Length: 268
Length: 236
Image (tube, rainbow over all chains, first blue to last red; front, top):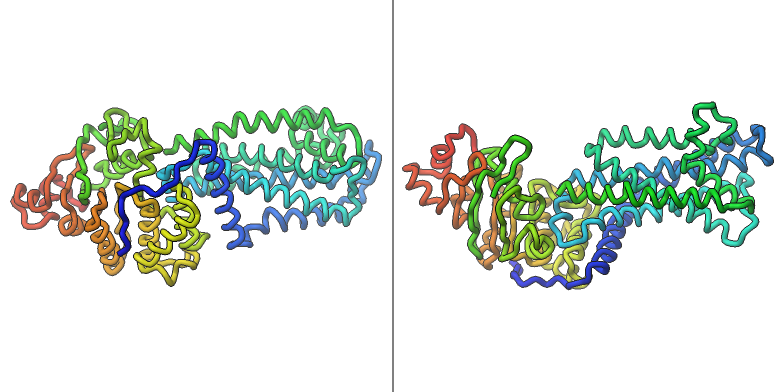
């Protein structure tokens, strides 16, 4: 038997460095899991493209009252944001699966930064949201979706989707840990995501929605993100929707994000 | 030390010492407080009252330092099933603070010591129960812990796998690693533990060597001594 010994051989790191290192290690582990189990990429990367193709093929030629261009130009940004909304709950589910397995006790018994499990998860999801948005922009291009007006507008759209997706991922992480049962969370987390995607300007201008939906749709971050993408794509003014999106992102990170970290620690 | 969950007192004034270099067994019927005690020692839970010192460090105020010096093998394998055994060991070693090369060298050492060389690059989900347990124990040893905490490490294993695991634990003890374990198999405590503490209703009701407990209760086996001490109809 190889000597186990008792002298610690761990390398000491400062707290911020440790936090960054541990978060990167957790993100690396999540990515390695995806690489070794590529079937897990079907939901976040393949299904959205299929949905875009189906939606645009079925509804893309509808006329839309009050919107200047073809409906598909309006619809494609909505589908991009809808998919980010529906992907965000997978963050909460993945974190909850970790929390409910023996791996959680393993992580909590290590001298690692405890917040790094959540931050590592969000780093992984940032890559998934970015890849998803890039794929959808590419697929949308095949259906006539064009980004003009500003240099680097495509990158700005990807960044907006990533920021929105991560904010919702932080919310889903908190809700998932609060529900604390993977099977229940699987059924519960997607329901509000679907509702948020529909009660918004993702598929129709707010003025065409049912009366009771309009006040919710106006303040819905899904609507703000759609407006940012449409403005970036058309070269229109982006200031107000960007500010609105920024407020939601900061708010969701500060409240549910912090609560999710606390919840993870409280389970210890 | 005290710990309650609502109205239920899981630990009701536990006071014990684990000697350096010893293998100490915690026995008790289901619900006696063994896992609660182990979780507090491993910094996974906080006591409501009392102090716990691990290798001279206070678990309440020096949790990070305690975690840097302990290894935990819990009741459920702390492994990522969707990764290989190798990836698990290296990840856990790196999260324990080891540099990549040190973690890789240590993973290779432990894979060999635990007889997992051939399977180490396979996904953990393809492992047998015994292999998972050995990998889990290897993961707990990545950073050379001063105290190894084992919560029912052999539960659910077939006799062959239990024997293999105990061979490894016996070698660890021979090397001077301090170990605290809970077990449902009293014959394991009888054969291997230097000291046995019997918990019942959150209290230590008897402590001593297995031989002490047997002679004190006038019983020939630790099983019989345990039943006499706890009045339990079941096993630990």
